[in-house]
Image 1 (spheres, rainbow over the protein chains, first blue to last red):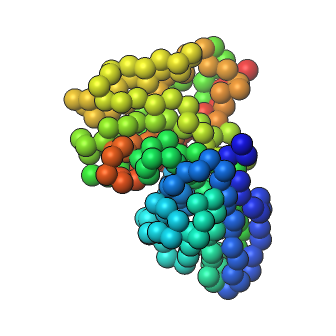
Image 2 (cartoon, one colour):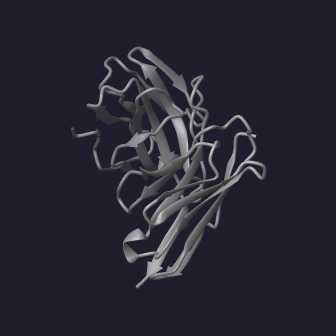
Image 3 (cartoon, helix red, strand yellow):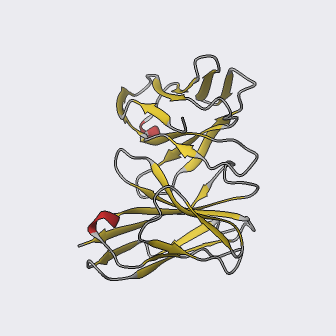
Amino acid sequence: NAGVTQTPKFQVLKTGQSMTLQCAQDMNHEYMSWYRQDPGMGLRLIHYSVGAGITDQGEVPNGYNVSRSTTEDFPLRLLSAAPSQTSVYFCASSFKGLGETQYFGPGTRLLVL
Amino acid sequence: QQQVKQSPQSLIVQKGGISIINCAYENTAFDYFPWYQQFPGKGPALLIAIRPDVSEKKEGRFTISFNKSAKQFSLHIMDSQPGDSATYFCAASILSGGFKTIFGAGTRLFVKA
């Protein structure tokens, strides 16, 4: 099992550019989430999904879109990158619920200039 | 009421010493309290977790102490080693009903050799 995988590992964008962060899991987990990690602020939930075709907003959803067409994949789209979106992004999955143990990917470090 | 407050922000401990990280919560409905360990450049991973029906859980050198009446829980790392140097996140959630995990802000631990 590869667990949760994320690509790319590192990305530099210019303000206004768009991009998609990829996330995939091979554990057949129904629940998937995107978090951003900023110094001193812990992990903040961006968007989450409770199954294929079902997504919802988390704590900090503005500027991001998600979709879940399959159980395995949960991409995060930045529509028009801003310097405030410079962060480390983690995808996570869990088996039975969002409150259960989260299995995290290795992260994508994003720098927006 | 949904916050989890974690302290200290950073901690330096001598090799062989005890590392203590504290967390406090307000929502008495929380029923799952995990701790995650994150090494530099990696995603967080579950270290140890406790349910509120016990006051202490020990796994090797790692112990969670839980005080339900004070709404506090803490992580103790006995005989701290340089390999324990990482960021530690406490978290809280409700296992049923679709509740999302709430993370503390994190503690950066450095164990001096």
